[in-house]
Image (cartoon, helix red, strand yellow):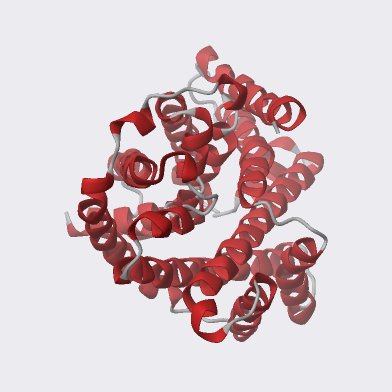
Length: 373
């Protein structure tokens, strides 16, 4: 039981990240029941994709990451596609953490110290890039602690907001924004890169690994829905893109300051974690020098920020629909070749619906940008 709880906290704690702050805004635009529909569908799709990946990891004697498995089972070209989608998704996440982290810093300190969002974003970046350069290794322990604190603060938020929650905020549906939640939700529920770490914690116990994956993704989904109910029910159409600013306008007070502080810490630790992952990928998988790997991993999202990519919802939506969507498609085809090469059972034809779903999701995102945005 203890092993399961430890693995679950690592898996779910990694999944629940910056995406949570964009979900209430998506619900405010499209409607709560539209978001609920997407959650039901994407939760199932995400669980299935992660379970396929887990089957490969369990039976492989030599551990790889997704690009490594793509190269082994699909060839060099697919390895390049896997690397590109991986870099795209992680860079998008780092950019999102920069945007939200800088905004939370501004909301927390500007009333005392002044300054604009760009200044606070640079402050957030400098501190994070320095720790990534130094190669902090114990950040995972901090994240586990934050995972527990997060739920405490979430419950406090709910009871603080309860008198202000208006049922009318959940009733509207805006079909113009129907496709908006797809990429944001997929981004928020994805934890594929953590599956190998979970396997290291629990060993080659297939039943327990599957249990952790299913429980972790469902726990993340329920947590997100609880957060959406709290923020959307309180803020309604005034829900801000990063959730907390609109919430602050309704409630104000010290509890929201606590929320800003927690948001900063959550974004900061996750920025360091993903920055280290990207740095290691450039260094170990592509053979780039350590300093160059650090420079690209850190300054690529910062460069995009100064090029004008500052729309938080758009960034996580694109990273989810395209970067993560491509990764999902690759997992399915790796699994098919894995079964062929290991002479295992044939792949269930219904699993081919997964790539179709991810492709449709990409079209959803394109539709939103052309017709709804």
